[in-house]
Image 1: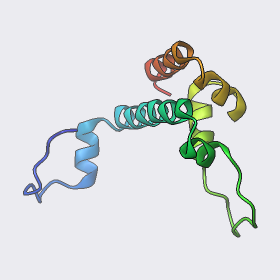
Image 2: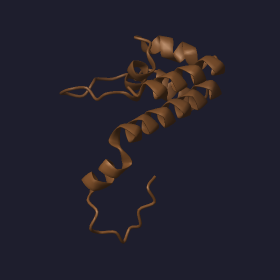
Image 3: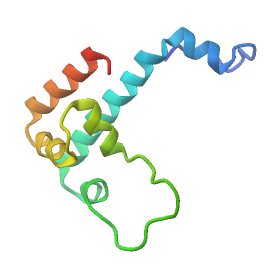
Image 4: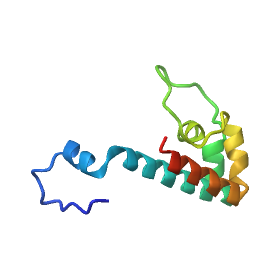
Length: 106
């Protein structure tokens, strides 16, 4: 994003993140995740099953990992993941949800 050359060895990751403004970086990542999810869900192929489906078997031990869908659902507004998946079908509604969440900066 900042077009920093690989030869700039003096710059630390913290310094680069401070220059990039961490909050805008996180918002940009969330926005790209949401647009990609909308693209996948409208296609309705194998990727749709992977993101929305459930797998058989046991869960792994320990704390469960945060799923992309859960993070996007809280970022976009609806409390339930199913509401988020339903909104994906309407492209205009999906774009408005992403734009509003991006403007709020949550």
